[in-house]
Length: 282
Image (cartoon, rainbow, N blue to C red):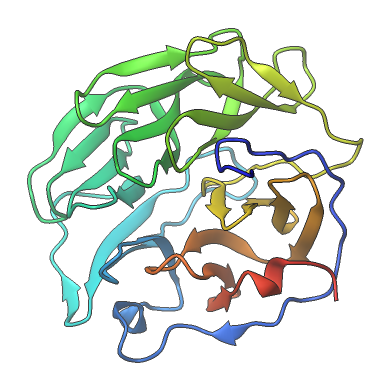
């Protein structure tokens, strides 16, 4: 039986044409208040959205992506307490929000307009949460020597995992929270690894030239596939190892409020894909 914890990513990506897409969202949704210059960071189960306007950075620099955040509801924009962020994510099943501040501090707010409580320091995104809102995975340290951390949101305890996998980036926490898939380059060659608590990391070998996650948004488990971005576009890999799609020129994939579609960005437009759109090359 396929499980989300058994994320199998070992397949070369087939490059296809554009997926069938529709403009999103419908006017009744909170995202109808999003400006074309705003990136969707996350969408809650009730439809509330966290979006951010990307602030200017030096061209061709390695500076952090800094966002000026907003909280969108069906009634419009709501106040956001605090300043600019590197990332903000809803904690599933709650009204609480995790943020990475521009000082690389991980904070928790019980709502976007509530005071922040510090959880960890020297934190780098992207953030990846399990489906129950009990854990979050991220990287921590002094760049580029970042290592994987899993924080229990019930206890507040942050645990370093696989300290030998350095540098590490783009962790994806399985929906049940038991496994993390991430990219790491301990020997100078980026590769995928699977990490479980109490076990040695297992490399996940891919054919040469296969795309790897690289971007400000965490990979997301969407049905029986992992959807992620890199510099060339958005890619979909089946959890059974079968190749799915590569869609060029698209960025920042996030799950929709009901989890039945993936939202992504292209030139200011917000696109919506179903599982069928990401299934295979057409």
